[in-house]
Length: 309
Image 1 (cartoon, rainbow, N blue to C red):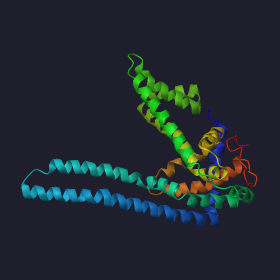
Image 2 (tube, rainbow, N blue to C red; image 1 turned 135 degrees about the vertical axis):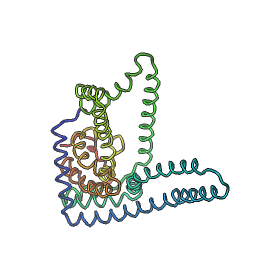
Image 3 (cartoon, rainbow, N blue to C red; image 1 turned 45 degrees about the vertical axis):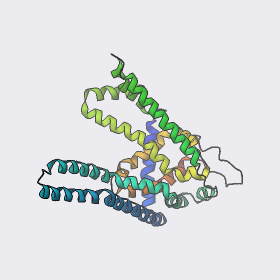
Image 4 (tube, helix red, strand yellow; image 1 turned 180 degrees about the vertical axis):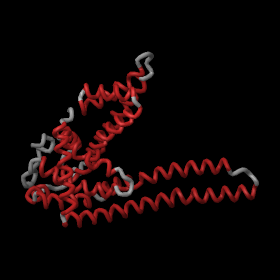
């Protein structure tokens, strides 16, 4: 599906409206603070664990290196350089730790973020919230595992094929650019993808910009799935249905998600913006999806993967 510029713009405008709505609503604010407390505890625990497991042993090794150098008379420079390199690598990892901790909290305590979502939905559309809440949560753990394994196998096979074809004489160098254009064309169309690829080929700065935009478009789907998890879970949408729902609403969702994507990536304050986006997602659901009927035993929601009206 090629992105529709008008739908992307509407999704972006809805994101800004939803964020403002969530930020000024007192009930949502209370849920936001509750979720932020849980997330902060998770980030603090992860930080402490990494410090105890990695940085404390590194500090002890550095001290031991200096002591042994003084006692045995050997040159500590080589060992010190290796330890310094390890410390720098771990410092880089530590900068991404808050987002990793957030991802863990999202999966371990989904009810915290579901509470933020429903607090906003209760304020935006109480009837929709009541109908959606009446449906029992369904997790589909094995279906998610199977779907993730299939996606991982597909990506591995595509990478392997690209590596093999890239070694073909004379034409192998075309494999990576052609693959990039084919994937980007899915979002912006073949002419625009070809133009971006041509510009990236002649300009290093344009290449970095194009790569960043493309990665952001791909990452937006994962963020959208996390934000829409309360909606999907209550209606029992399987991973395949979720993917179909995303394709049907892709342009609006890309605009909506990109409004939050950059700030969510910020190390220590990104989780707060994720929680705000979780509340804003309720407004997206209320505006862009059909309201489900109240749950009756044995019912199945047949329209979770259809285009939003």
